[in-house]
Image 1 (cartoon, rainbow, N blue to C red):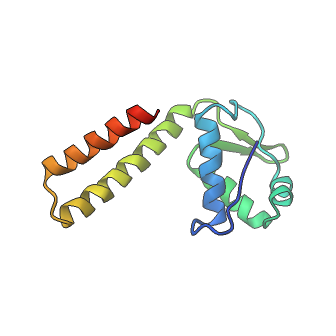
Image 2 (cartoon, rainbow, N blue to C red; image 1 turned 60 degrees about the horizontal axis):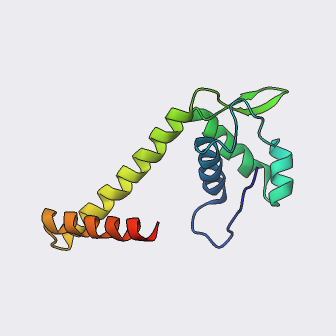
Length: 128
């Protein structure tokens, strides 16, 4: 399991952990029922507080991405890959909503917004 913490980021460390673990679950890098490192091991490897790791694990469990079994550890949930995908999709929709609101506030019409998106998608297709 590979986690990279950016101490210069405005995003809190526990949120960085959550997003990276979710991404690894969605992409299949973390397999169903695979154990996550213990709170102490993760904290030691990343040189961060155990409380920060615990908070991230607790949130992941509350969102259904992992299950913690007392005395055994924290494990990736077997059936929640679809849930993880839906969570990422919702985050993208929220980002689009914010951008659309910003564009409308700036005076762009719906057609202009659609045109910008189409141009950006064409550029994306050419570069990928």
